[in-house]
Each structure stands twice: as structure tokens, then as C-alpha cells.
Amino acid sequence: GENVEQHPSTLSVQEGDSAVIKCTYSDSASNYFPWYKQELGKRPQLIIDIRSNVGEKKDQRIAVTLNKTAKHFSLHITETQPEDSAVYFCAASSTGNQFYFGTGTSLTVIP
Amino acid sequence: GAVVSQHPSWVICKSGTSVKIECRSLDFQATTMFWYRQFPKQSLMLMATSNEGSKATYEQGVEKDKFLINHASLTLSTLTVTSAHPEDSSFYICSADAGTVEETQYFGPGTRLLVL
Image 1 (cartoon, one colour):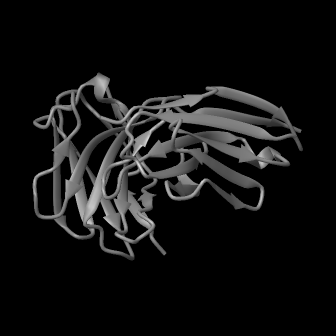
Image 2 (cartoon, each protein chain N blue to C red):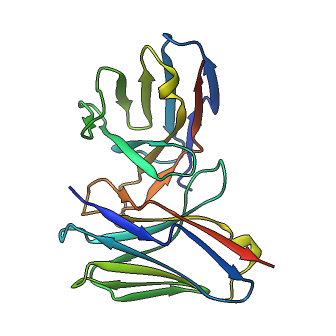
């Protein structure tokens, strides 16, 4: 089955700086890669996603890049704000199948 | 749109009892629902995939006789933790596939189970 690895497990940045979270996957059949933000005790919320036919996608301060050859994808948050503090999960999925999640990154933005 | 609810939001039970958790898609029909388990400060671990009108598909290592899943309609899936024990205490989250091109899964708010 699919194996998704995520790094780092914890990340602290100063407000206004950028944050980068990286994930790798093992199954070359995976073609959909969502990123979720989860605040303590709450449900994961989709923040951005990318498909295998696209190399990069951006939505305001958030961007995701995908390297299919190397089987890795990354989340980039620019101009970080305290409210960006949360746990972020990457996931990988092949069409119509279940999601496999990374281990999560706890992001702390220091005011 | 795409709201998923779970009930109950939290439950405390005695060891040996069974607990049923409901997952509902409120404004869309979900052919497929997923059940996850999350321990504190850990990732979401997929337990099973629930398809309406058919048997659930369990991930390796998940006991199907202990975690009974029923997907009776396109808007409701239930997870029953049978003969719960303290090690079953966890945060259980369901998600529903809206069946759109985007393939996005929408998550329920989760159910926190504490078995004494």
C-alpha cells in the first residue's frame, strides 16, 4: 500500500517568515495530493490540493509543489501569521481510493 | 455545502460495553465514507472504507469484528466499537467523499471516546 512520510514533525517560525513542509509518497499510482490543517480537537480542514498533472498550485499565501518523478510534494506558507499555527497533514490518494496521511507537522508561528 | 456531522461528539463508557458512532453527510450523498482513528499528537490512521450497500473494507490490522461498520444509506454510516476496552480510547473521525471531480473528502468533527 501507499506510504506517506512527512517532515518536519515540528516547525517554529517567526511571524512573517515562510514555512515549508515536505512529504514523500511511495505509490506511483497516487495522483491526488491534498493538504489539511487541523486545530486542536477539531476536524481536518482542506486548505489546498494538487493533482499529478500539475506541478504547482497557489492560493494566496499558500502554495503546493509536486515532483512526480521524485515522488515528493511540499506545502509553502508565506507571510505566516499566528493563526496559521496548527497541525498540517499531507495525504496521497489514487483516483477513487482512500487517502493515506502523513504523520503531521505541528507549526507554531511566533508573534 | 458539504457538511459532515458525527454523533456523539464525545462519550465515556465502561469497559466491556459497546459504543455506536454515527456519521452523516448533511447536504450531499456519500457513496463512500471513511473511518479514521487519531491518537493524541499523531496522524489520522485509516481504519476502514465504507461503501453504501456493501461490506466495509478494513485496513490491515483492524479487527472487523470489533469495529463494526454499517453504511445503510447514502447519508449515514455507523461505527460500533464492540466490547470496548481502555486501549480503544481515541478520537474517531469519519469523512465522506462527495463524489465530485475534485475527490475531496469532507471530515466530520470527530468523536472522542474514553473507555474506563
